[in-house]
Image (cartoon, rainbow over all chains, first blue to last red; front, side):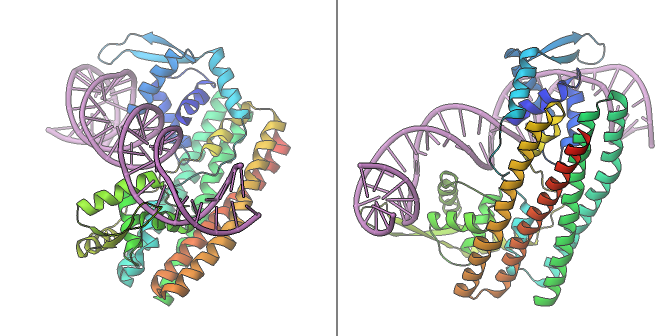
Length: 183
Length: 183
DNA sequence: ACGGGCATGTAAGGGGTTACATGATTCT
DNA sequence: AGAATCATGTAACCCCTTACATGCCCGT
């Protein structure tokens, strides 16, 4: 259900193609919402049927024709209603790595420590990514579009990703110590 | 795919029914893995077909017969192989609240602040839950089963939940300040 | 009298992934 | 020579949620 609003949200900042939308998602929302192209294209088609967006087709050669989507007034209203709607549920996350750790009491110490160190490396890389690539992307979009209010929110979201990774890393470091001492 | 291992993981600590498994999931893994009964029952049936678990039926009156599941040797092996398998992907989380915030530059300041305060209340309640109910549950299970190695991992997982909520709360507090000053 | 806990399931449908299909241009 | 970028989509499949179905016992 939220994919619809993700697309409307980006389209409310300006017209984009499905392909463009995928890149925006990968660059900015991927740590709290993600989608594959094979899900985005049918979703846009459905939004167009509901008249929440409109497509302009630009013929191209050697490539499929480009479809540039614009949000309609109905789409804008739909988006604003969703934004104002109160949310009273917590996110239900799924993290297979934590699940595995939870049951890893049965594992030998060495293998378990190897798993923890691997996770640590992954999360450190991700932290660096948010600090570099994502930060650059946010700055660039703000500079290009001049959307200051949106810019504030995007920077806040990016900082969430950063803080999440920091917390994860601190926890993994503690977990490694605990495992070394107690198991 | 991981639901299978969640069930095998709990069953490796002792025999349980589908109903019991649901309660264990709710009490301990819900912040990194969750499932509904309508998914658990068919999953157990399938595990039994694959001979990774075995069911003992205990007739009851006034209630459906109880099916107590035991992990088989093949199931144990399957679980251990999964535990030792390296994971090199980050979790792909979905958090509708963050998504909404990301697009909330278009929202008026008051509504936005109301949303942030609501989220803050939810996450504070969740933090308290991990510190009280979840902590009590972990202690109780350790005391009952005497599984010390597993106990260490369960307590680590619980602490992750706690740290995650702390980080979320700190971020929300900062976000409220930023919105109050900049928007 | 009503809600919650106990205890099992099925059926329909929505959301999401993986694989397939096409094909030119540009970078390494 | 091969991979990545641009650009669209479909089809099969799996995972998960929602709603339905049954029915006793216990606490408030």
